Length: 233
Image (cartoon, rainbow, N blue to C red; front, side, top):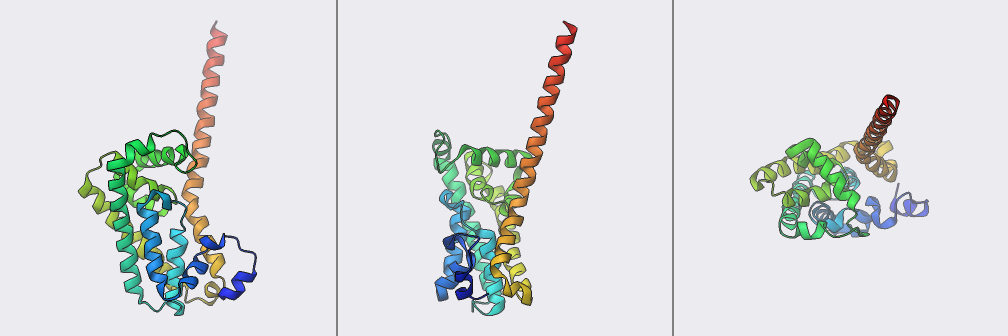
């Protein structure tokens, strides 16, 4: 699908969040913009809405098709480095300004549900959450700051961040590169980008379903216990 064709179709993503539109519009600056967005999503709390997963995938696909002339190894290296540096930046933001930032009342930007979900993710998976969170939108943005707020050992955090950065940034870019050599994928860039977004949201969807089931179960247990206590009166 060409840029002109994509523009004439009904866009399933806002144009300013469509990875194909972003990369094509930037021309020779595509890789630089990719790195900036990856850094912002991983390190700046304001970047939680950015399309990191689909952007990496599309960048790899563009390298395969020649739309991006930069070698694959260099794109992977730069994206991974920016993901790591972003995490380091996010950690220190959390360590220095986190408590005051996250203790504010509910706001339109830093919704308490984002913080709560990140807390739950961290509590459930521990240090390896730093790696796993790379593949979960929103959580990957806030978890770095939460690690800083919690004063996680910096060396340990940096090691997990490096591993996560390689698996995420390099892994998804390479995936896009090899799938980009398939004609069907090349002809449906927008659909592939949306699929990546959907797949990246699956962990959150699964967790929400599990949380609702657990809440329903606990509510039923409480009702049963209350009924039992009433019968004994």
